[in-house]
Amino acid sequence: MYGAIFGDIVGSSYEFRETEKTKLFRLFTEESRFTDDTVMSLAVAKALIEAGPSGDEKTVKERLVDNLVNFGRSFPDAGYGKMFKAWFMGENHEPYGSFGNGSAMRVSAAGWLFDSVERTREVARWTAEVTHNDPEAVKGAEAVATVIFLARNDWNNATIQHYIQREFGYELTRSIEDLRKDYEGDATCANTVPQAIRAFLEAEDFEDAIRGAVSLGGDTDTLACMAGSMAEAKFEIPEEFKEEVRDRITPNMGKLLLDYENIVQKLEERRDVLLQIHNFSAEHSKELLMPVLNALDIRMKAGCLFFMPVELPEEETAKLQEKFPKGSVIPLARDLHPQRRSIATNDGKRWLAAFTSVSEGNKRDAETYYVGEPIGFTLQACMQIADCAGVVINAWGERFFFTREMIEIFLSKKEPEVQDDQAER
Image (cartoon, rainbow, N blue to C red):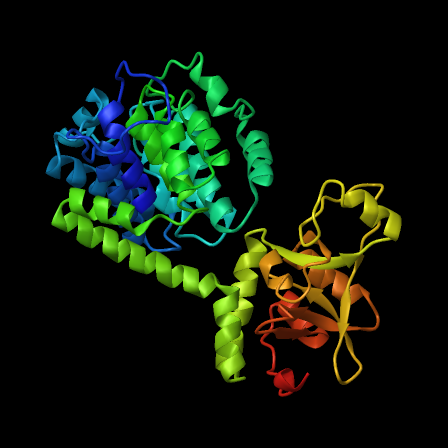
């Protein structure tokens, strides 16, 4: 949420101003302030928290309408469009067919609160439909929430771009530098969401995403709000930027932001495989095993990858070194024949080696190549190898031996038994 609010505040000074299109601008001016983007982002976050993770469409939409109306009336001069202000100030709270970007600017919480891309997209649609029920506005909200979900689940930029282009039909190949030449911004989803996604995709860090979005001109607060919400899922936000946000919003907003961030942190800890393995390593118990498996299940359903160290023929390795340094992920190609590496333990068993990140694999061996495999694919592959004892996750650090028996139970969704010899291998 910090990313969305920070982008809104920075962009507020430059909204529809005739200024030079450049990344070289002051982040904060005397006119920097939060706008309707911040107000409605917090309203949606509060609504989704109240509805709960499994809230049905009726419940979610009821909470959305109540919070959008209440927040709007509490901050009536935050810079809303005429139609939306009439909606929350009036008595008729039916959707009014807007195709504006108000749906996409407020959706960021949907990208963080759910464990699957399907649920994320579903709830994102609902957040739009209570007001902005035009297909373009619904698509814009869904796309922004989807990018957030994919980015926080470690999908790389190329894969995110491919997914968004395929699922939503956005053209995302033009660079920000090229877009600046002829971009004439407005407040529609169709003419702001793809541009904000592009600013995220080519950003080098969080600040660069904000600067890229604002440099386009036009509806800069909303462009930067959307770009910032997506960039937060990939990059760390400097603490001084968070302090700027806290200093520029009201105390009640700050309390809601803190409550929301605490909820997200707890959800992220539940999804954190490394953290759960660390806890399990200290005490091998069923109570601590289940969080490991739950985290793996969440990551598997989110389309996350294991990074598998591989061996290749010498001639293929020599060819790869021309483009890819050792210790990096290689693309799969017809002319490559990678073989997954296995690790032998003291009891003579062999385990497929899998890492939650390349950096985990490179802790001991930075001279290998990796391929990224969906978690479920790796587990299924292990079950097809007769002499494979299982998968060892993060073998060079705090490791977890995912035994063949445990994998079989995991894939069948039964409750596993704790293996007493985890620490001895």
